[in-house]
Image 1 (cartoon, helix red, strand yellow):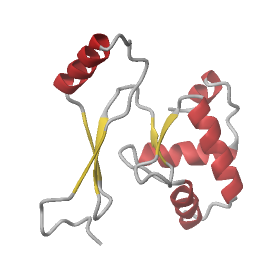
Image 2 (cartoon, helix red, strand yellow):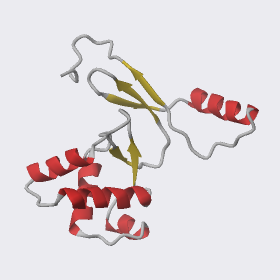
Image 3 (tube, one colour):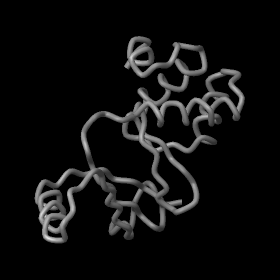
Image 4 (cartoon, one colour):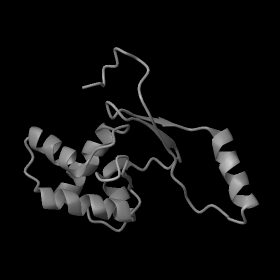
Length: 140
């Protein structure tokens, strides 16, 4: 994504938007909270306020540039919208998030919706569990 993508989304290419978009593009598999985005920008020497980070993330979400999730039910995390639907497995212990695509699951969901008289507009699938690797590098 670049300035043209921002313009197509109806957003001008301001410095904070560029910085946040660049950060998300540099971490395409990350699921970052607004606070994490803010902290990483500070670590890079950028001076973007936390309110600006929240505002820009909200604009990006509204423009479908990013997706918002609440894996823990309270904290919103954001990921770049790369145009392909995927689901998530989240470790309850270490917080690691793994993305996956499974056409069998997708077809089964469509079948269930059809059997119940629904057409799916969108859906989210989060699977929660625990890492089975005792030496998981993500565990605190």
